[in-house]
Image (cartoon, rainbow, N blue to C red; front, side, top):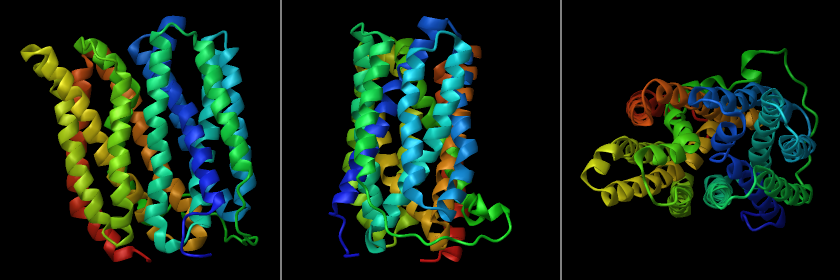
Length: 398
């Protein structure tokens, strides 16, 4: 394969990934309102119910990585994409909370599979010398979806659109994405004879230190993506909270333009460390928003949206670097397992963030929840600089 990214299959994958995540992000800030308005559940119950999705994705990721490393990847990718798409129909007809939870769990299982397989397919079709840049652009489609999805969902909710209409919008977006995904052609992958089942067939053991650092980082991220709109209500902000996700996506887009190329030059740990410092500052600033509100509402609004931009820059820098770090720790025949471990670490933290955020808000408030999350990012930073960076340079394969 020529050393270039501009192949039609790569652009098909970018489009399919954008539409997949658009459908995903369209619902993320809306579902807490849906559960509260339709089923009248508490903050704690919202956290438990929403975490079912992440727990399901977490449970399936190690097995999907093993299957991707053993069998043809595109059929598994398309099957998971198909299930993910048509579960939106189930939401429309979920007349009870129990039925909604069941559909949410199945949705999480399909999401866990389609994201691992999508990342792995992209790695297969791009030249290795430009993997960091390619993954950066691929991740940028997530960020674009993060911009338009939550903003669209919140605007539709605030404008009085029914939840059914929002679900149909997500369904249509993912259906079009499924069509683009079907156009992708992947290189031939011969059958692989596997050794007896062992832990490293499902989890990249060498990636566990980095996974722990990433897990700590994703806990406050999970709190933010799921509860930031409710936090804004708690603060009494007048500005549309949909712009929080837009500015976060703008920050990610700007950082992805240059971060992938720096990663391809071998400065993976330096990029991650730099992003960690930005994220630590941003989460502490987010936890300080109530104090800013007591001084002046405009100051609080400015700090709130500055946080979103800084989080976008920090995470946008780190995502492709973390992904490449995991891939570089694994041999080529364990790419799926490496990607699965990377995303599993992220999902564990997201799930904990949903549960912890809802629980802390129930017994206290979201200000305390975000302060707790900010402290976790400090632990992640120290652990990465002291342990993960050294471990990576000692064990990397490329």
